[in-house]
Length: 442
Picture 1 (cartoon, rainbow, N blue to C red):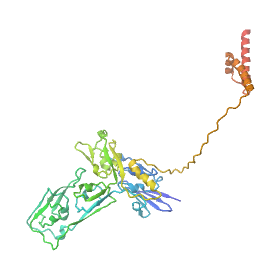
Picture 2 (picture 1 turned 30 degrees about the vertical axis):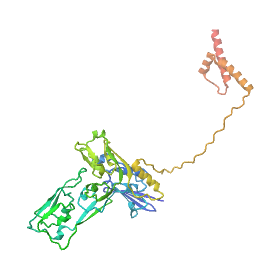
Picture 3 (picture 1 turned 90 degrees about the horizontal axis):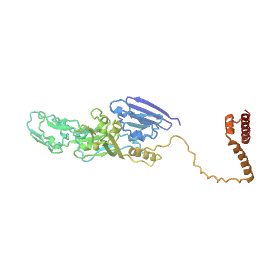
Picture 4 (picture 1 turned 90 degrees about the vertical axis):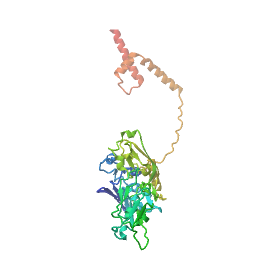
């Protein structure tokens, strides 16, 4: 089967395509969304994904945190199914990979429950802008604010939780914004009333869930009672399950499914090298905005808001952060031929150990049973032959032990390789005898 692969770059999106006789698969990787957590690298069964220079990227380098080897990629879709920040999207034909029931995918959700009013607190604290809240009707639908109406309006600050419903209803209320922080998620600092606008109609009294507003004046008479309603929508593709919306909600009106269960801790001895004001790498890569600088000038993290993705670990140049995962929230793994491979991949998210399938194509031969070798038996000895051998060896030893014979033999070497050892020794002995005779004549 012919398989064609192609890679193209469109802005911040790296688009990989695989075309075969059976299907067309497209993997889109938006590297601007990617925070370098490396979960996809761990999952990949063919090592087609590798982490780039995450530390440098976290401190300003514009580059993809993950590098893709197109030739090694088998378009299995595991990266798209389990990316906690939705940096990958994979389609098979016209179908989104996450919508296919036969493949599991990561779950990270925020779902409003029956306690939700809604109010205006959760929308501004969501780090991924996944929450949208709309209210109706507004004060404008009851006609313009009346002029020259005298009265009095009081907001009890002890009761008011700055939910913002009154401000979304009537322009006479002004909420002073502030930047939410991990230790103080409320996005508003104070509620004010612009009494130059207020006509003391009293409609806001019934809107306040805490009964914190009292109005004296000329009530606006309506033909029928009205109910101030709201509609809250959560874009689950954007939601990372950090839980900030639940933490800021005064009514516990949102159910959270975190993508991972685990723990995060700071390594005290490594924090000596940390410069939270000059570096900010962990702040920059955190999708949940759960990092802050404490009063002692050191970095701190709100564990309740952390999703344990581990991007901060890869971005920290001084190895001061450790993240351990003990659970993964995901859709059921169906009983399919590839179920075991998915189970192994998901398990690696917590164990960080990936058992990859053998795709080398090498076929190992079957084990062959090795039979023990038969015992070697010594041959029978011929006593007469042994006597004759020893007799010859005695003659050789007698001559070889003479120093002059050995010296001539070792100096002149062996001339004829066809001679047996006894002949060679005899030749050396005769030569030695000639040397001795010549010396005597002199």
